Length: 504
Ligand SMILES: Nc1ncnc2c1ncn2[C@@H]1O[C@H](COP(=O)(O)OP(=O)(O)OP(=O)(O)O)[C@@H](O)[C@H]1O
Ligand SMILES: [Mg+2]
Image (cartoon, rainbow, N blue to C red):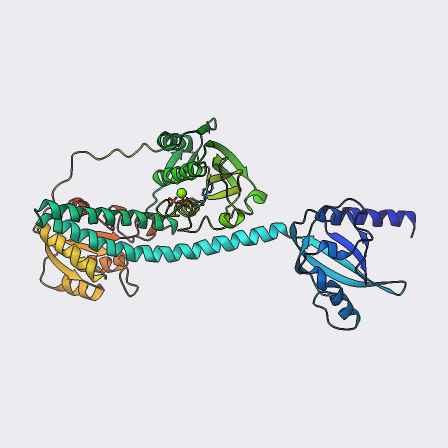
């Protein structure tokens, strides 16, 4: 080989991105390029003369020579002279590294050699596991959404009848019991709300939110709840940035992150909350399953107990908690994840046992003026008109009966329908229906909005009010009906009265 050619060959080997190894038939390394040293963490030439098994796991090493011998005896090999295959190797520090390996046979002066080509696939592995995790969370989300929907119907019935019952009872002692039961059901409703947020089916109307304002709000609350010896550090971006998110959901997510950080500091320590603007390009967002662009970042860090890899892999799953019974519901992070995904963002968690945890909330940067907070409507509500006729349509018979009972108590004449057919029959009857109160999701794939449209075509004077466990933005197609005409389940008698009073 000419000097020039040899130099070029050398450059080829030194600069090749893949690790390339030349090994003889007894498994001794004769050559390894620079990428090999980098991949396995060895110094230059340290691998030459060593057995290839030193780069293998304890599981694989004992079988290696038998594979080579079998191959040389003419038996088939799963790897030699065939395309790349995923294998695990071990680097100098004993850490396992995944790579694609292809091996080809070569002959030098009549002796058999093998050339191994190794490509590091750590990034690909991480990406794949994140994707799997995202898919898993998505299906768990769909499942929880379905359960939450049914649960909402049960709670509607329980709460409705308890409230009705409370009007019939004068006995203080009995009233107290009913009140306790009602409060328990309300807690159940709160839990359902969180589940629906995880499954992205919750009412999450977004507004332009100034993230520094939200952080400051939450910090005011958290300060009171911090234990002795827990310091809180705030580093807010200047200027402050805005995003499009449901403010209450964002703040409840941040509150959970702060409480989680506090719980990770049983012996005191530091919590730091910082906000920044981040420009994330293709490379940055690859593992986060979000699109490249400008993101506002809220980072909550603590130097507490941290998490093991095993815990870290499960924290986004609903109901996963390490807190002792009664301490946590395990919905905080899963809900946060669901909310951020819903608004085009995500959360990213890093943690080391006994070193601490940082959780970053990323939301797309959306410029604009923050919305002024909703001012509570004053002046009370009109009492319901009463004495009108309402047609209630709900495929859940318990909810249907309960709603009808409440409405007759309020003074309405009530007609009931379990499905489209019964509803249309009622409309075509002699009854003069003023209002239709209809569930959004009816059985047999019927949609409340479609049934309502048919009713409207038959009788233009009727007003509509829809009830649903899923609310506003989660019901993407309202047909010709407005969001104002929606009543979230479970509802109290007061809420029902108020909505009916607003329905003209
Ligand atoms: N900052 C942190 N440090 C250490 N572990 C954490 C931290 N944040 C979360 N974890 C772990 O993740 C688990 C899940 O957190 P998540 O907020 O989802 O639920 P929870 O706090 O247990 O209950 P909930 O928030 O519903 O009351 C926690 O139980 C804890 O093991
Ligand atoms: Mg929590």
